[in-house]
Length: 237
Image (cartoon, rainbow, N blue to C red; front, side, top):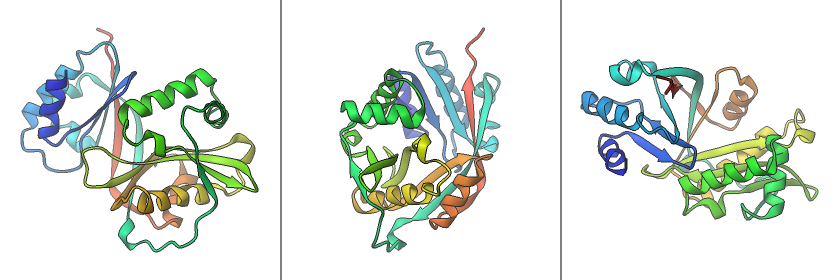
């Protein structure tokens, strides 16, 4: 499988693996060797140990006929970007960086995600498998009057030219609906620029998530024309 992944990377296809998933992302650009990409991704689909997820535009998927017939649409997201070198934020809300696998960190994340401690820990383990050199510096908690409000995980996307992303972002259930999302997102942007030295921020949110779209626009992000569609491989044969 590693050989196939390296072949895809040479073609410009982005592949990340964790304990549960194989994530395949194709940027919205002209890929000259579509037939080879179609063959390689199809080989990945034969892996039955992990879920295979493909993210690309519908136009790109149409160039992958073998893969297309095996994928099921599970979601659609709107893409935003921001050039961080043009950002001059001098003030940012209070935040702390927590050790990701500390018991306090796991417990807080489980409450924010509204899942068990075991599932929260699994989430962090998958994050570590995808971003092993960055994971210890990612767990960022928005603090207000010494109370944790929410968490964001900024990072540099592997195999990119300092492209900053947020692995996940969430407000604690007790603090939702109070306008904290803008501040939490701005903390992520601040850390991407100043701590991770990202040149560009790229973020995506579901088409139906209007509040998050407004947060990104308020924080200076620009909506892109194309949408990102998420497909899952249906391995029931």
